[in-house]
Length: 296
Image 1 (cartoon, rainbow, N blue to C red):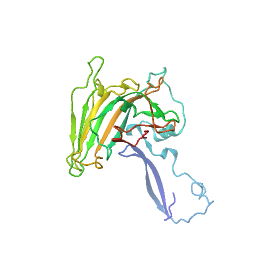
Image 2 (image 1 turned 90 degrees about the vertical axis):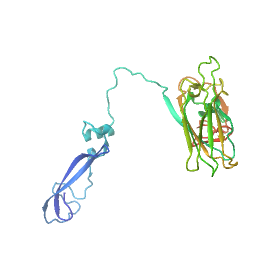
Image 3 (image 1 turned 60 degrees about the horizontal axis):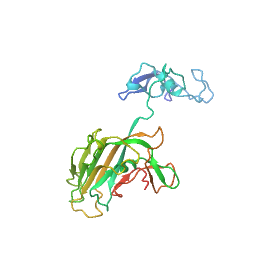
Image 4 (image 1 turned 120 degrees about the vertical axis):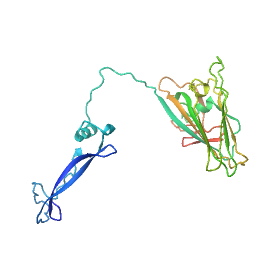
């Protein structure tokens, strides 16, 4: 390599491994001799027989940065680049493996309390859960559930003061087993309170899978008005217009309806574009759905 300062140097490229698991290239320039050099014109041959000014790639393909699995690999850098950049054949299992077309998935729905609608002894029903998994099916706004079953994995609550008015949130499991009286939610009251605007109250409820609050619910019309839990908010004397002090995250597990027809639950929405996915506010818009299409 000829440098403009008149230094002839040997350039060595070496692979190095950094602490973040990336294979990178290190370049060492070793001066060989100080000689008088003259800038070459385009078209004049260099010492290695190539034309000066010709378009030449500065790096070969193996000099790309490649992340190796676990930061280590027995393969060379060039082999890994080839595997990423070249369509190729690989061995398949000798026999078709087992797999599940309907895996469990998780999602989170966030709700924030409205400024002017109080949350007083409201009940979360199976229908409220069904409405978080809707798809509009026609131009009249009819929507059905795109999941087969769902369950509540957890309920997280945060509340803050409005000025000096503390906010208290109370949740009570209320569901009962009407058939066998064997799988009921135990009597419980979960509550948290804020201390100030800077010190929110918080809690997370993780229901058991073998109780109604945490069990699986089909998106059918069976017992759609059945209650899972009750919710009450005490705003500590704050007046209407100052009630946006509660945030609730409900984490769901669900299975998509990939086999068979929808389970039967349907509802009319104000969204008239077929294919629109979305959810619903809760308790007559006392809790407002965030970051997801609100279909009603």
